[in-house]
Image (cartoon, rainbow over all chains, first blue to last red; front, side, top):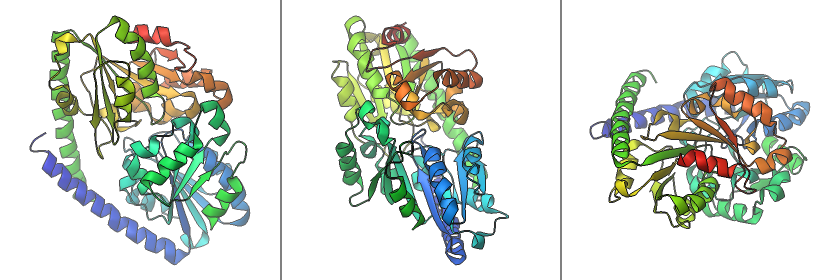
Amino acid sequence: MTGTEPRLVEVRRNLLKDNDLRARALRQRFRTAGVRVVSVVSSPGAGKTTLLAALLQNLTQQLRVAALVGDLATDNDARRLAASGAPTRQITTGTVCHLEARMIEQALEGWELAELDLLLIENVGNLVCPSAYDLGEDVRLVLAAVTEGEDKPLKYPTIFNTADLAVITKCDLAEAAGCDLDLLRHNIEAVRPGMPVRLVSARSGLGMAELQHAVAA
Amino acid sequence: MTGTEPRLVEVRRNLLKDNDLRARALRQRFRTAGVRVVSVVSSPGAGKTTLLAALLQNLTQQLRVAALVGDLATDNDARRLAASGAPTRQITTGTVCHLEARMIEQALEGWELAELDLLLIENVGNLVCPSAYDLGEDVRLVLAAVTEGEDKPLKYPTIFNTADLAVITKCDLAEAAGCDLDLLRHNIEAVRPGMPVRLVSARSGLGMAELQHAVAA
């Protein structure tokens, strides 16, 4: 690896700087247009799409909402979210393991932001790489499913550190999965003191009204 | 991004080439020493450590086994696996979202490979990036938990393509999670035709003896 690492670090720095500049410009565009942007990160299968589909069902009644969804392959998620009636676009990243600001720019082409109140962005399922890429969002939600074990915040601290709100999902399975919810909350608090935490189940409806309020606020 | 992308591609190519050369040398070392190497990849929380801890418990009765465990932070997993009595080392990757061959090389320092029959390697929880890095292993297991949804193989095809055996974990929760096991198997078959699939539950013991046999074989 000697010889390639310093260059890699330099290229990575340029790439992140480019992303930060684009994210800053995006954030400015969103503010000017008066659109609130909420992004969601989690490991694969923590329930991002199910949660967003449930939120959209109600949010579309009161707000002009649109959604962007990132995945390596398939447009399954966009089709699931589009069922709500909200304009939805899939960002297919190929082998790229996270969304970047330039992908958001491209996906927004042709949309009149001023006609939106809220934009939801679902990142690629990954607890590592998305943490390094600002997408210009106002609020970043990190999801942790009760089925993943209580130690995920300790093992993936960076993604919890870059988030603004933690959402514990699949709470209807907490008992069956043997999840210690107090320990999970304790571990979130340990890596990101003071971050609000919400317990939800998209299936049972637990906590969904409160989460919807937080997302729309 | 113009201007940085071509360089990034070049550096990434060098990096992967370096990894492939190191992985090839590792594979040769493992063969010469007569040690079988099995690695495990999955999303965070799919049950890699629980599965390996259960396997180690029995494997240590019949084979000389050691384990390497990758995580961004904490040595929780190494401590869990070490309870089996098998020599275990944690590879803490910091912000690196996958294991690389050079990390395996370093972690093996001071171990006499010829004194081992089996080496188990647990990758960082990530369904994307580990797929690009050969670790010199003989067999790669990809885990998919029933709680993650049936569509993961379709959405993360590359990692399923680089694996040799798919293990569906947490089968004791299949009904509670509403998982359609036939659909999950169908989706694995769609992205990696012919790959063997095993259904297990480390908690109930379902399928564990057969999996242990496949890992040790």
